Image (cartoon, rainbow, N blue to C red; front, top):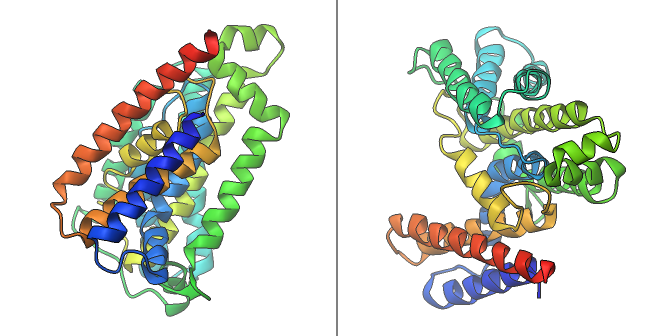
Length: 309
């Protein structure tokens, strides 16, 4: 019995329950809608997995998504740049912002909670300043909107992006030496440093990757909703962190998996979608999510105690 198996069982129970009480839940169209609605949070959660594995945290990803979306809107609608060039500008903004977090955490040694709490406000403030808090960019080309609203066969157009990022991070974390050193850093930073691991570079790299994924997620968000605005991604950072922790990654670092994060993401996405189709109060999602998170933390402690025994 592992944490992932318990979570998979919970996901299965959710599917059975909402199939019974929800309308049109167990359909191919609804499955696609679940993927479509959770793609941006999924990208953020996948990128946050190695960050939390090192014992860090990044609270700025939701605000950064908004800033990248606004940069894309300004570049494409006001500056008249081609869509591809505007997309590059948005992703470059994400990388630059991630590099700022990386420099403050890995080079200056500022605690990541303090750093990303500050940049959480900074990035959202910059997005609001650039739009005066009210400007909204829309009327994007149909070819770009296809990325968020179209389908490839039975699958939403976002699905290949989510799958490629998930596979890439799975290989990084679970099939490379770098991934093993990330877990070692989270387990014991001093021990990893004494073992010759370049702790600063490794920690900095995961924050840069987090910024990169926030930039990509901003493009999916704008394409899905058809608009770029300063309040984009509000609350996404909390949902992403919840998915990671629910998936079994220790908030203290040193243990976790990309597969567990995907299970956590699926559990949250199915819960929100099922409650809506069952005509249950939307507030119930927050209550059940909190209960699942507390149960996951308890299960983590249980499995840790069993492993030590």
